[in-house]
Structures are given as structure tokens and as C-alpha cells.
Length: 114
Image 1 (tube, rainbow, N blue to C red):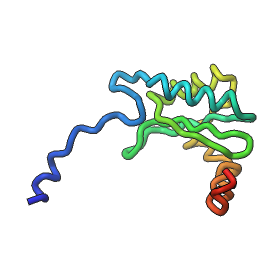
Image 2 (cartoon, rainbow, N blue to C red):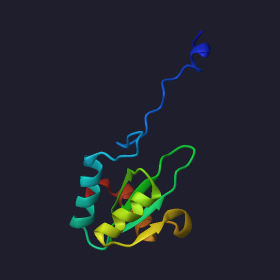
Image 3 (cartoon, one colour):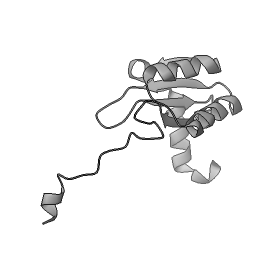
Image 4 (spheres, helix red, strand yellow):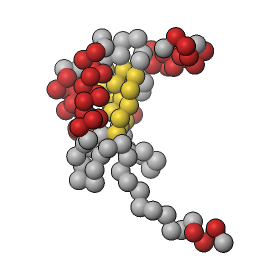
């Protein structure tokens, strides 16, 4: 009888600390701000909303270290980048930097070097 229960799912919460009114959780703003201030050469990549994910902001440092958080809108992501005085890009247009992929590859091979 589990088949009948599939249609009755709980309503989905907007992910990652973004409320339905579009306001962002302070912890997310603090995390993004601390990442941008504590690393060199940080760039912001705004990832558009898809059928699977919300709009996200990806911050990538000079060495490829990165962090990603859900944000209310692409405009919010670009304003955040401007307020931090870091370059902001649309990830769907420019793609991701090679240094991020290199960082992921390095850490996959040697996870104890993080």
C-alpha cells in the first residue's frame, strides 16, 4: 500500500535558510561574508534556479576552495558580490573556473590534505 502514499508528500521547504518571503538567514550571510574576507582572490558565481535547486551563490577563492549557499535571487547574489567588492559572474554564462575543478580533484585524491 506504500504506492498510494507517494502522492501525499509534505510540502517542500525552500532550501538553505531562505524563507518563503525571500529573506535570507543571517547565518548564511555571515558564512559568505567570512569566506570572502578570509580568503584571497574570491569571485562570486550566481547559479540560476533550476527544477531541482534554488538560486545559489558560489564563492571560489584563488586556490579553488569554494563554498555554495542558497540565496533568494540572482539580484541578491550580484548585490552581495558588489558589497564585498569581488567580481560577480553568472555561472550559466561563464561556467566554473578551472581552479575549482583542480581543487576538487586534489582533495578527492588526498582528502587528508584539506
